[in-house]
Image (tube, rainbow, N blue to C red):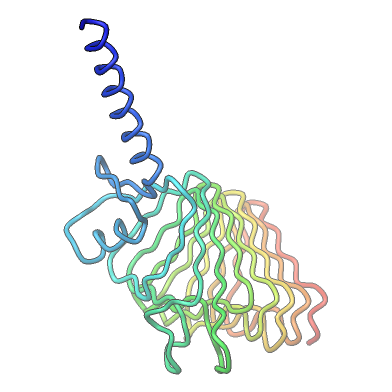
Length: 243
């Protein structure tokens, strides 16, 4: 009898341990002490609920929300965030872009922007409002393919100890209503290459502090309608642009 009771207890303990492990495996994100089975649930809790604090990633995730209208910080722990064509802005006006109307911070993230909207003109992966701030910090590694960034007057992009690459652009890589701000600092690397049409950077005040900026192989000019400030041994290279 005692032997049977011991076996039953062991089976029950094993079952609970197994259930806990399965539950832990299904957690994609965490905010403070709250676990979320999906990153989407955590993000919506910040955007539409009362949840505050950074979102910690436990897995690679997809960001498909359409619009960021509250401050959001994502601490990636080097997990990847894919930002595809946004299902909520998949129409002829918005063309699949992510709208950033507050501060969106990617902290220690691998981020891949790939808006695959077809048959539009001047398509963007990200559009910043005049209050929009886009930040890549703390060893983030970011790639944009095909479509880049549009920024309204007064918006800001901060790159701090991170790498950003925009390649194979089908239009101007970065365009701002005069003027947007691009701050590249703290040993960051910012690269723009192979813009099929138009320019590399248009309408930005660009600050390069102890970092590097490279714009190459654009079919038009590397940088127009903006200012460039280089400090603390910053390095800027414009090469093989066709005008």
